[in-house]
Length: 115
Image (cartoon, rainbow, N blue to C red; front, side, top):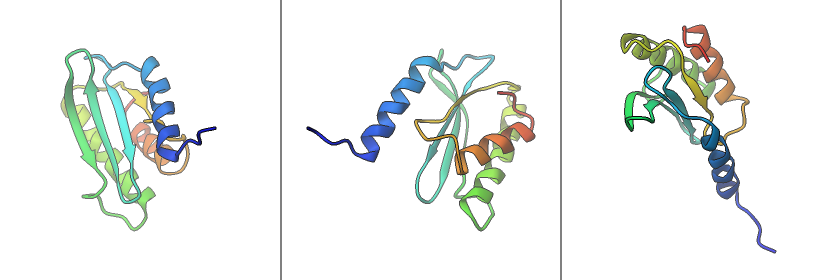
């Protein structure tokens, strides 16, 4: 019996999520990737295959990854509003909706994005 690694399990979950989540011009996909050191988020129009805005928590200020993710969410919401985007579809990227991912999503909602 073959054992699965963490990366294989996350990739499988991500494929399941991506089968259901599609970004459009009016409602782009908010894709999130989390590494051990940073969180990267993009607003993607899947119909055109274009990234509308992107942000990394490496540039954000804060002591903990959660604080940096919350600061990045505010910046991404500003970039989105400048592009005229108010509503998005959230793509958690196969990560569990807890911790840093949840903090990012809550901060993005508080900053004005609807999802």
